[in-house]
Length: 397
Image (cartoon, rainbow, N blue to C red; front, side, top):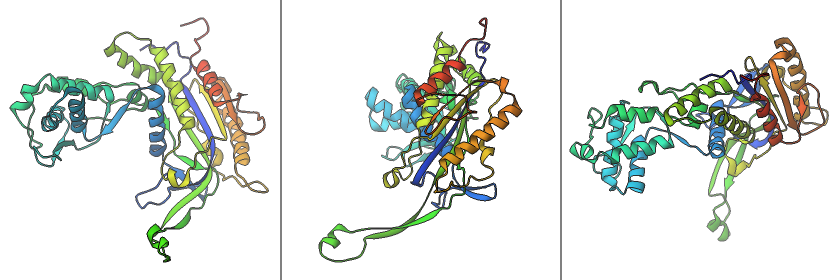
């Protein structure tokens, strides 16, 4: 897919965001995730955690959906029941046939004919919602092949056409072609994502604290007795986070060109523009939802800076290798912003300012020099960045 009309290559998003008492991301021991950087411990939110929150918001923005699951068979069976009127047991068997015909290694859970019977792939498979519908439609067109033989173990073969099943699995949509897909068992199903998301971390030292909590037994309390019905402890932290992500516009154009090649002619540039806009909006507004009911850490970013570059992504994470010290009277937000600006000015000079096609920012506080043009809102920031990124080359291409 030609990309000469896109002078921009990457759109970088830098965010400073203060988050109060929270447990945005935990490890296998239920502890707050941390990282040692610059000789001190920082609170960390993994890229996978924030990317999931980003992807869920992005799907709503763009109006397309995808599912990562080992239970393709159940997904297909549900569609057959709900939209094609199939019996529950026959639908489950049809789902098993789809899995067996996919060429993806799988196992059987439960017993054939039982409520819990299911064919489950060994690994997660990322499918567009359209692909699930199409797989169900393929099964619905071939009831005789499904009824002819039951899939009862992982070595059983389906008579459904392998090529047709894999062709449907291979299809993607805006979500998959933005975030990527790893699927080695189906040829040409893998997609190099256009989005890169860094681990978020606090710009300063951040200690993890333990919250000891109890839950009162309402009936016991009503009877005049004392004591709790439950007691436990949980970790939490707070701080100002640096967040970074970038989207490769040329990769996105290439990916979407493949989608449209199978769907028929459409305006790839327009679709890419809409996707990039949805990505920027979702990354700015997204927040991992862990422990949200007990912490409600729903803050807005203090500062968002977007840079449109013609060469390569450029993170400002190294600005905080030296941890930010709180200002007199407390607070890390303003000091973090000052440290970010100072580093940004230095590193962009070193890398070459001619490679920056546009730079804008929006945020709380006074005007600052070194991050480009200030705009009044995040929506204005996104619009200005998108306009710059998709502006045609001088003279046209």
